[in-house]
Amino acid sequence: MGYPTPTECRKFTDDEDIMLLRQVNAERPFEARQGEITKAGTSVARALNEHADFRRPGFDYKKAQHRFGILIESHRSFNRDSSKASDINEGYGGKLQLLDELLSAVDDTNSDERDRLVQTVVVSQRSELEGSIIREEALSTLGKRKSSENDKDGGSTNTSRFAKLAAAIQEDTKADLEFREAELEFRKYQYERDIEEREKDSEAARGQAHLQHEDLTAMLNILQKKYDK
Image 1 (cartoon, one colour):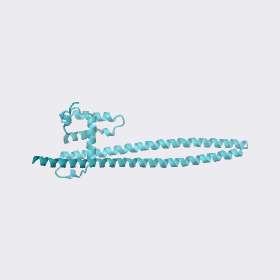
Image 2 (spheres, helix red, strand yellow):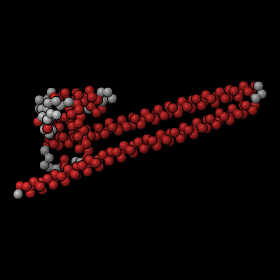
Image 3 (cartoon, one colour):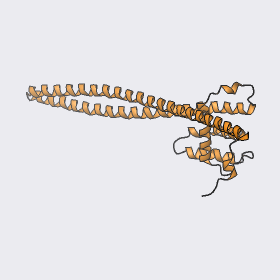
Image 4 (cartoon, one colour):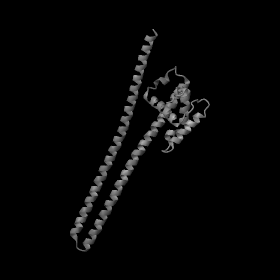
């Protein structure tokens, strides 16, 4: 197994992050349609590779996506009040401003996609219900027609039976429609709650990882001081 090259090991600089964020903000690959996302991301990576100040050979769509994801999730997780501090340089302030804008755009896109999926399910279920109603109405019309024919033939008993059957079908269909619409609303509510809970759990996990990292760093600093003595 080969060893990573120095370029692969080198951390991203603020300038490189800002170049990445600016290119993503210009092309917005996360807003691309399904099937076009990889193409849009590849365009971002290609533009950066052509930039004279972006020196990361082998930088491709997957690496761009990975780094952008890290920047967005880190920005989402941690308190950004430090951006108001006087000792923050202009470049870093610009980076935070870009992250603010992109985080908002990413969240809006994800929210729109969730709404679209829920609406697709609702429309599909409603179409199914409407089809069921049409079928039941057809049965009802057929029943009335048969009842009319029976009236001409003196079949009053059959007329009453078909009329009752048609009325019962209509009542059942109406009740079924109301129940399934209520069920769809409840499923939509559950889906949105699940999304919120997963986001909260994800943020909590990232916060815990950050605290553990700080504890480990502090411990290593203490050990280093003892070793230096």
